[in-house]
Image (tube, rainbow, N blue to C red):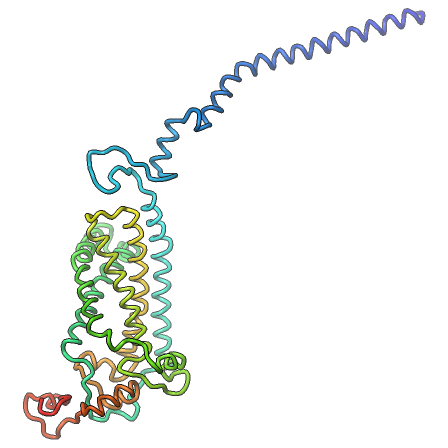
Length: 366
């Protein structure tokens, strides 16, 4: 083949390859347009649907309102009242999570830790005896009215604590023992008792505060008492009628006790206009206050019973031994001593007298 013919053949081949490429790309473009163009309206509609400012999705908005993702949405209902138009309130779910994941487990850890440390302290330290033994002389520490207020408050609190903690922890402890049906009956009874006797605790707390507040203000010497742990960590320090720890317990009981009362009334009487958010917050404060107050109460009970000789007598008979008073409340002891209120039982007590049962009257002639 001549050179000219070869050039012509190459040109024709190149032209055919070019046309083949053009046809291939044309088919690809045509196929792409055929597939993409019909989807453009759907893409536009999708963009509009997801743009809430253009076309909101009724189904998505309805579910968002039901779940209260943003703010509570008030619906229409024939029942008129606070939050009656809210179908599902998110704060209720927040409270349930707090109750089951925080209050119940960490409350048990706190109370168990305090109780365990109290028992450990008793095993290490033992019972604190009366220095010098019993003197036989008695001092009136609490009169009958003061003891009645104390035991009335204690009784109401223990009833409420028992029923409340059954409601909080009963499913973990009582269902394995009583079964679901037995626990259901028990929980229902505890709920009714808790709601019924709860308002009495406010009355008891007011009586307690009025009766004991005047002797529970902090004064000189209380700080040093706290620093030395009442003599356990250093030299003995003086104290008045109540030492610094007893005053701390009084104010803890007052603050958390009143918090229990106020939030309890909010929860007990859900007809005074409070919202469900207020009730959820009240649940948090109520449960937390109960756990804190119960944990600190363990220490108070320990020192009043097993921890110290002669301490419990002040709330049973009303009297304490003079040596006990001088060792633990020396300033108060000096006051009653100067006022002549320390009495020694007579050797031949008359029948039916206070001395006949080993307790002397704080005033001669009584």
